[in-house]
Length: 415
Image (cartoon, rainbow, N blue to C red; front, top):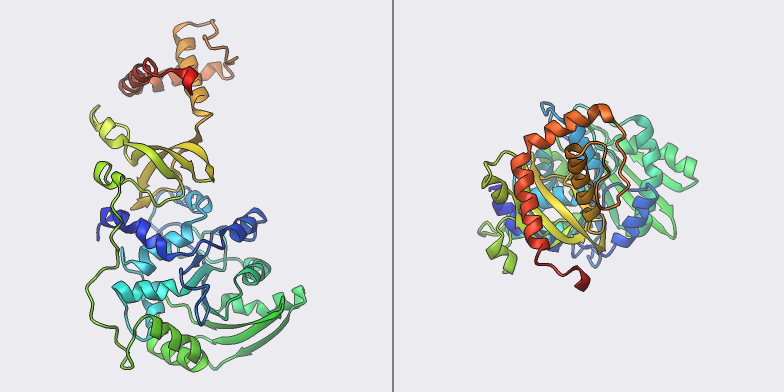
């Protein structure tokens, strides 16, 4: 499956996610209880059994990735990161994942694809317990993060009120007793017999007028014997497992129905599909009018755009009611979380500041027209700035010529 095929269906995939909790999630993000909004399946709120699956943490990069800090920054600034992962690998099958494959087998006793896979994730909720990206799979969360994470997680449970919480990995459960005692929350904890090299836990917490049942199993990554854990989950969570098998259409024999691969649902026809192929309309920034930056730069030799693909004017990712200009960037096989975005009211002044810099280089000692009040704060670096502008002279001339042409036809008084 190519990135282009995934892009085309991504908007439809996100229709399987319920965003009615987002106001609560936004408040939790504001109070540092959350970094990433959880995935809530579209049918989860009304499900017969509300099962929340909890992973451990996101990995920013693979061990051999060069620019790890950039990837960490992207993860830290993308509140939709968890949902993107579920869309890419849980609901769809853009690339294979041991985590999701083993999770599906443990829950359902078989692999699932297409409609069965989509149906499962419409009835599941998912989040990660540690709300900090690990630099790579070799990094482990700190012990204080597991202990302190319970305070934030309890706040999440108060809002979601699940029937059952399934932890993938036992590290968080190792700190449950101490954390609940510190928080003054009534709780129970039982360690089961060792299975597949791990001691599963069955535990619960009673607070806010509810009692939440929880279970922690071995992490589903390496050396995970899914058949053993399938039997364990069926024994400990019979109602939950039976319900998930029902919604995923798993037969008594443990097999999904025959079906064609439609894990990427077709996107409803729209003007943007036929006129600007590949534009990501499903991300937080919602384009209203856009252009293909790659084509513009290719016409000049293709020296600049690299991962820069589209320029959009639309709804800002930080506030749907505000307008912004965004450069969409495609990096490391996904839309980059470091894509540039500027509020529309600031962009003209940024452009004016760039033009003022050009003017000052051509007219040393003079103040640029426009009354910006610009000040040269690092005169020793003016020569290197001039070199950069000269390096991109072709692009600057082309872009500013387009600005000049459009400005000549715009009646500013009618804005």
